Amino acid sequence: MRRPSPLTDILPRLVVLVLVLACTGAARAQAPESERASLRFRYGLSSRQGEQVDVGPGLTYSGLTPNDVALTLMGWAGEYLGGQVDLQREGFELRDASSRVTGGSLVRGSLGPRGRLSLGPVRLELGAGYGFAQLPLFGGFTYAPVLQRGVRHAALISGRVLVALPAELQLEARGEVPLTLSAHAADGLKASSSGYVVGAALSYPVVRRDGWTGRVLLDVQQAHDTMELEASGLRSEQRMRRIGLGFEVALGPGPRIIECPVHGYVPIQVVDADTGAPLVGARVRVPSLLQPGTTEEKVTDAQGRVMVNLPTGEQSAQVSLEGYDSATERTTVNFVENPDLEIRLHNKAPKTGSLKLKVVQGKDSAPVADVQVVSGKAQLRTNKAGELLLEGLEPGPVAVSMSAPGFRATEEAAVVVAGQTSELVVVLSQDRKGELATLVGQVRSARNGQPLVATVTIAQAKVRTRTDKSGTFTARVRGGTYRITLSAAGHVTQTKMVTVREGEQAILNVDLFPRGR
Image 1 (tube, rainbow, N blue to C red):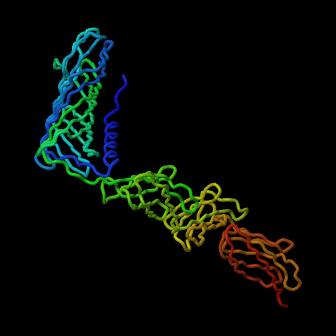
Image 2: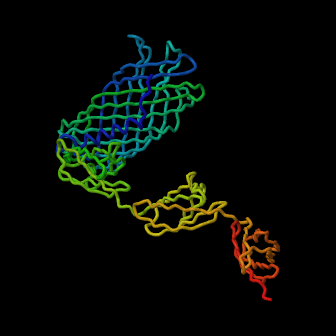
């Protein structure tokens, strides 16, 4: 058996239907009457589908049953608070072909306080209280079932919406959900139970007298109930639809006439002012049809479109979207057909810019990956291509510091322009820290420029070496500043100060003057 739609699926559809019908088709409608009390009697038939599952083959049943009656009494202590008593008798018959197998009646009732609120042609009611229901269970054998009556006691939450329609018609939608307090079978076995009831009615006044009104109504109702015995696992589920005619007597003042605003549907499309491309997710704020004086918000779909329902006359639509300037357009709404309203949004002027950074080595300009880049509070690293994009920077000069293992740390400056991406290429030099410096040179005679065999002494580095036949020498020292002494036979000794960096090479050429005789 197909399971019925859950209450959370059915009830929103009824509410939408009620609200749509509230203000369509005419300019004038009657507001729902604020009666002091009402008595409603309904008589009709019911269509039932159900199944009962246990360890055996189970049982399914369906069919129409007459003599379905209901009585509802409602009273109000004032404009907003009141109470309700509801009693329904469900005729029940199980037939095999033309012969009756079993039957009887089931009772459903509730009572409790209610509250109501009128919003123009719509009246909302909400109630809570106690609910009692007899649910069908079958004993005996599958081929000869016997109707038994399970019982459910529940806290009941209910609601009703009344909408005044043209020609004095009145539409009603209602629903109730039981919160089970206890449930048991006819023999007292404990059970669990759940369910819901939704319904609708269309009524029309046929009798009007001073102080009371008589209305005939066409009433439909759907109930869904389940009951499962805890001990045996036997489970019964039924779905029942009722339809019937009723008569309601309401005590109270006569109906009041209110204006229901005429409206029209307006298709709106939001596009980019520069490219004409549709903008998805734009927020469109328009006047509310159901609550005059307020606004409601719609969101554009994948085509940048949205359909809004507006009161007739001159109306406005305000559109906003992140990254764009807000815009407001006005249009005249007709009751019949309205042309598309296109709203064009302009991009906001950028307030920040970006900096594209590329880091390379000094020798061959090869990219350097995983370089730590610090700019303000941001700390990022370059990718495999040695590149990095810094976004959201304030316009003006910006300092960028870079460091990587094996390279000397450096800091560069760039200028950021709002709305643009500036580019900066940074060359890193290899860090030769710990590598000895090389000192090379040549010693010659100042008289004739001939190379000399000389002694080269660097006392601080404990280095003492001699030049070769060509007068050249080589010494390896750590980076620093040194005093170098150069001496040769028959020549005046000279002292030079030399500064060298680690890993680098320095050249020192010296001419020695001969000694005087």
